[in-house]
Image 1 (cartoon, rainbow, N blue to C red):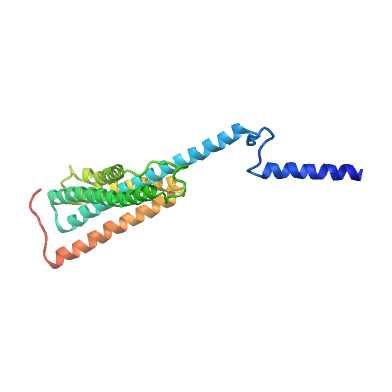
Image 2 (cartoon, rainbow, N blue to C red; image 1 turned 180 degrees about the vertical axis):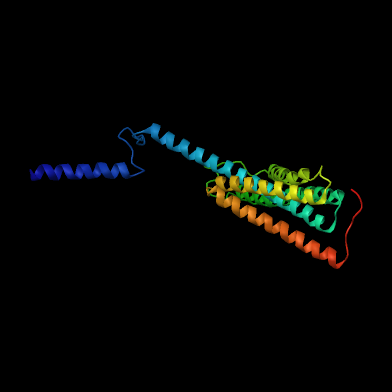
Length: 238
């Protein structure tokens, strides 16, 4: 019995070591194959799907945040100008100016940022210093695409308060409608951004709503004080 145990144990050990050794080859000279190749393919496919989902989620979340920036910026600008002027033209012109300027600023900033990353990645690939370049040939970031998406997101968010106050001439009603529509947009953008980020939607909506209110109140308060101190008040019909 002892002879059999001593003859079996080394054989089992050798087999185990060979199965664990990545350089081990079968007797015919071929590399060992997986016991379940279909499972390996499924795992690889799941990993690719997860990566694609994460990339899409990041793009969507960035778009939501860009739209939120546009909404807060344009709404705060319109409400702030409304504190110093009772005409609809002044609010609309200021809102339109903020919309165009903000979209251009977002696009240029995103273009410069992504293009800098593009140059770095391209240089690393040309020098062969990037890790796993051959194994992970993912497309480099497109600066124009990122800039366009950022500008479009800002425009979508900024159009909400601008269109809400476009057809209302009453000063008080205009401020109320712009504030109400902006608050609703903040709640929606905050909830969607939280969902895409894996957080609870009501918490994200509340944070974004409070932040937007603070921005609008601070802008209104500062410009109201400024208009009183310097006697700036345009009361012409508009």
